[in-house]
Every structure is written in C-alpha cells, then in structure tokens.
Length: 120
Image (cartoon, rainbow, N blue to C red; front, side, top):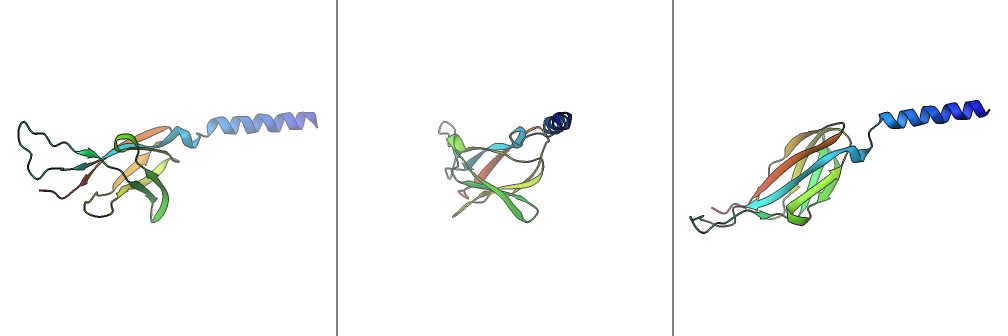
C-alpha cells in the first residue's frame, strides 16, 4: 500500500512540472488615445494620452476574459496559450480595431493599441 501511494505522488508531481501554470503565459500591453488636438504644431506637442477602459479577449466567438487598464493605460492578464482576438471596448466616440495574437506556452505577448479619437 505504501509503495502504491508513493508511486502516485511521484506521477502527480511529474505531470505538474510539465504543464505551465496560467501565470506563465498571457497578454499585456498599453492603450493610448489620440490625436488629442485638431492640429499639432511645432513647439506645441499634443501627445496621445493613456486610455482608461476595458479590453475584451475572445477566442472564436466566445468572450474569454475582460481586463481593465490601470496606471498609464497598461493592462496585463494571465491566460492559457492559444489564439485570441484582443480589442479595447470603446464606448462613445473613437475606434480601435481588434488585434489577433498568439499567446505562447511560456511568456507574454505584448500589444499596443491607439484608440482613434476622430479629432482631425
């Protein structure tokens, strides 16, 4: 009986070491919005600003996760490896096209979005 229990514990430990944890892979990035001024002039910069909001992550037609931006428009989410569509959820004026990303088995894929404010 003791040998059987030891054998099962040993197998379980090996299987866990081979599988990456969700924290080993994911998506992180930054979202800004711009332009912020109708006309940018030399000597009077008008940089894009950090965007605050939520980002939807889908696989196929299924919503897998939603994450909010924090400090400076940044976001980060641990997620299983695979192919995902990432898109800021823009409410009101502005647009941000989706981006398709491949999350690796280990590591994070980095993305950057600019929400187009429509100011011209």
